[in-house]
Image (tube, protein in one colour):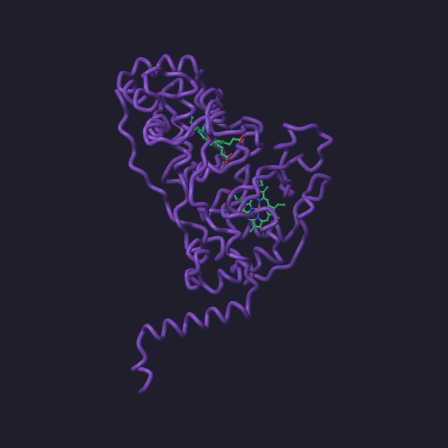
Length: 338
Ligand code: HEC
Ligand code: HEC
């Protein structure tokens, strides 16, 4: 047969052309530039990234001595093997606490415009004080923490290298933690290879999903940019007693009541838990929520409208979201100073 003479290179070329043609017929895809990853990690002028600060921050992030009882580190709740979160519906020790919320990932936190589900922290530097000093979390205070770090001789050279002298201050602690977290960036996913021009990087089903995501399903109204978030707050109509952003602004700001920060859709754990309250456990369940349109109330986002989706289309959306997963970002755990 003639066909056997066709080289695999030719076959790939034909397949590639078919897929490109298939795409233009079947699915309206968004411009790739809208989702291109930035080349550099941003950092504030007051805290430029340096290798030494990153190394110190990494050590602090994994050190349980940052908590009063020495039993809890940042990494206890933001664990590398759990998508830099904790895989729990509500964090450790949060049981019985009103307004307790699921632990978000710290991946890509360098780009966060507002931090926490309700946006109550404005920078990674400011945020770091909160878990250290919150009673049901690390339950410590900054002065006592600085004192404790002073008593660990192994920390002195690390502060020396990062800041030019071995003085330990709350600001230096939070600047280092922030620097380390800025280096936690999602690995390149199949979707990024598509953005870069490789048409075969994602399946035909995923492309159909992308077309729904940016079309009929309207997900992109809030899950936009390369991180798939608009860094803004919306009430998506979940059953919740938590006002979210609403507790930080006057009640007249109607659209902020029950509003939470749009989470990124990169590197999602495939079975959740999802949402600020960890109330959902599959992407199908999440998508069904949007199809149903959420609880009707004054604060419900104008972008939340009922729509129809076939089971096959739900599958396409899920396939698309899976292409945003770059796989675990593993790191070498630090050696604890003594
Ligand atoms: C007991 C578990 C726990 C510990 C320990 C913990 N966190 Fe968190 N972290 C959370 C929870 C829960 C939230 C969300 C809280 C909210 O929005 O009200 C959060 C939010 C964050 C955010 C904001 C992410 C975003 O998308 O807005 C950052 C950054 C962060 N933590 C860093 C840290 C650092 C740094 C430490 C150590 C100093 C730390 N966390 C310790 C549970 C924890
Ligand atoms: C009106 C803005 C908006 C629209 C439209 C929207 N989302 Fe969301 N999405 C959010 C917000 C806000 C949250 C967090 C809500 C909360 O926890 O209270 C969220 C949460 C999620 C989560 C959970 C992520 C996590 O880490 O917990 C997934 C998955 C998700 N959305 C997917 C989608 C898909 C798929 C669509 C389209 C069918 C969509 N979203 C449409 C704003 C939106």
